[in-house]
Amino acid sequence: MEKIIEEDIKKGFPINKIRFRFPPEPNGYLHIGHVKAIYLNFELGKKYKAPVYLRFDDTNPIGEEKKFLESIKKDILFLGFKWDYESYASDYFHKLYKWAIILIKNNKAYVDHHSKKVIQLQRKTPIEYGIHSNYRNRSINENLYLFEKMKNGFFEEGSCVLRAKIDMKSSNMNLRDPIMYRILKKKHHRTGNQWCIYPTYDWSHGQCDYIEQISHSLCSLEFENRRPLYNWYLDQIYEKNQIRPKQIEFSRLNLSHTITSKRKIQYLIEKKMIPSWDDPRILTISGLRRRGYTPTAIKNFIQEIGITKRNNIIDTSLLEFRIREHLNKITPRVMVVLHPVKLVIDNYSNDSTEWIDAENNPENLKFGFRKIPFSKFLYIEKNDFLEKKRKKFFRLSIGNEVRLKNAYIIKANSVVKNSKGEVIEIHCSYDPKSKSGKKKMKEKKRVKTTLHWVSVRHSIPIEIHIYHPIFLDRDPNRENFQKHVNPKTIEKIVAYAEPTLNQAKKGDRFQFQRIGYFYVDTTNQNCKEKKLVFNKTVSIKDKWKKIQNKNS
Image 1 (cartoon, rainbow, N blue to C red):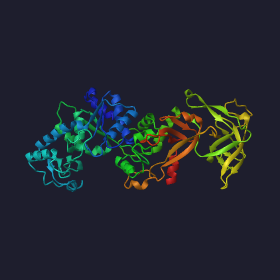
Image 2: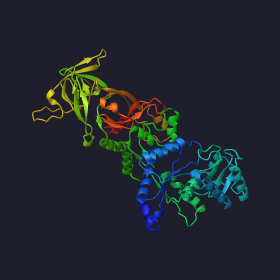
Image 3: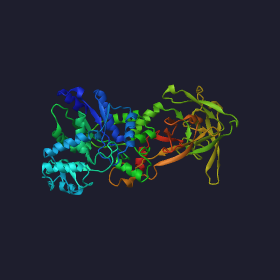
Image 4: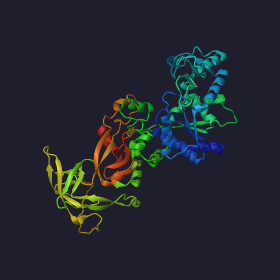
């Protein structure tokens, strides 16, 4: 992209005339794929000190809502970008209409009464010529008269359209007399009922770029075949003293095990597979934010994958690596037990509570220390204990020693089981001389494993949401994507945390030691009564190889 712009500058294009735009449709939330376009336009704007327009492509009143406008602006600001101008395609409806009349007067457009289905059939295929419409040779005056009637609401929806008169023999299907206007008797979120005809994206897109004097119109690769149409429309209105926009394409961002299609996300919502557009299981920017992803990590990911001309699927593990890398530096460590089993230290006093110093983040000493309570009765994770030690199992087992994080070395001696034979208590002894933080002596015992824990009496219950891939297939963007939906995408767990988390508030991030990174969110987003929930952002280690091996 930079090379193309630099070449234009070398050929004499004035650098102070460079302009970019990001043109989202307000019919859904932005997703991870949009971040690539946002990043590209705004970063190029910074590099060339050029203005960036946020232009909403609101040419279809069906599905467009104010809430989508607000979410788009919120997401761009979240990513750390700010637009110079805010505009709407609807700002230019009058101008677009006047230009359409000019095309009719130049015998370059006509009103067609065929249905959408018939028009599609007449276009044929790329290997055969299209069929001219019966209405293609109408007189200019008749077309002007009929187009005026379309504008005034005389015709019903679907009864006629305005088409450009280009080339029905073109191998590029986009040039086979494309539709410029269709009748939609729907209320527009900005213009109300003022219009009942609305321009298509192909007609409005390039002309809006021209009105705003956008120098470089950056589009995803699916618009490459439409570039000849983009240029043909510009040819009809271009004046030599104006900047002529140049369309440049780049590949879409496709991630494994997820979808970014608004239509498919809407399907998931309608089928109640997810409750909303900001659900943390999907990769909308709002969903990523609620899951705890940081703008820095997201932008680092986009920068790493780069801008290419070739479509491919990026592994989700790369995105997760970047968020894990960033959170490791900025989050405090705490101890939380998800699946508890009680641990009793037999030779520790019943009434004693020892407040132990613990580092908040060894990667960043500025985080300082905190006090955590240690007592006779603790919780550890169930899967950190085996009654009989197995090969390569280095955690706690009968007769085996481990260290409790920030505290002492313990040795398991016996267990208590319930009527089902399940271990409900582990009885241990501790070494009072093995406390963490003391100067290590040569003769001091060493153990391989350190376990996290919480004091039973001081622990607080917290609600945790653990998310799993919403699709089992690596590439669910193919047909019948519904078949690949994972039936178990969320686990809701009541876990036990150290008392530090009593101070947690919405927007905080933590590393739960040995488990993963978590973000403090609220449940019942649309209700007055909200409670805190800890959404799992990402695991401590990459989980995707394990998932892919399991599925294969």
